[in-house]
Amino acid sequence: MLEIRDLTVKANERQILHTVSLTIAKSEIHAMKGSNGSGKTSLALSIAGHPDYAVMSGDIRWNGGSILDKKPHERARLGIHWIGQSVPAFDGVGLLSVARGACSARGKAPDVFHLRSELVAALKRMGLGEDFLLRALHGDSSGGEKKKVELALAAVLKPECLILDEVDAGLDATGIEAAAGVIAELAGNAAVLVISHSDAFIERLGASRCYRMESGKLIHEH
Image 1: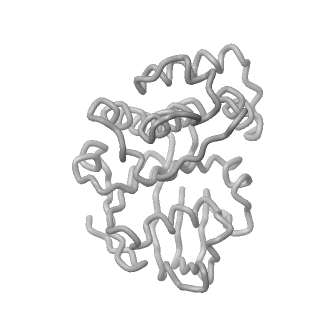
Image 2 (image 1 turned 180 degrees about the vertical axis):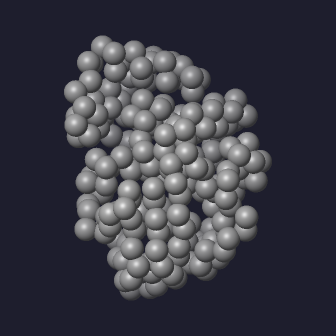
């Protein structure tokens, strides 16, 4: 269970989140809307543990324990997986190596041939070819392709908490359907927070709760 309790955050000496609270249980999908600059991404990055976002008060709790003292990679090891709006490229690093390292960091020792097979199937599900395993991660890929690769990776890693920041942006209709299917499947064993500007995408996911962020304050819509 992901719990945000009265979270107040600052960045660049400016308060950007004001006593934000929400709780997402396992198997729940919650959605968040709001204009650009309202604080949606700031919340996602705070959950992920980005060092530029300082928690002034409140708490972020995962499965009953505070994670405020955890670094980003430590939060990832706990099963918290974040996909951001902008996905950087990694020269010389392939998708298979990243997946294998992530599994190992979480205490798993995957068979590399089985892991490769899972990645190929996940890429195919997202409409991508096996050649994406041979590329440097996100090298020479479009924005939509990067999002598809990230979702394919998440489908294989099966995180327990999934934070998705405008993962539908840049996807065509087929990609959006594939993304919704992966997210719904992962939500069977995960707490999911989806940030999106698209009401249609949120409705497609069947989110159980929806929020609106305005000037760093969370408004519960339903």
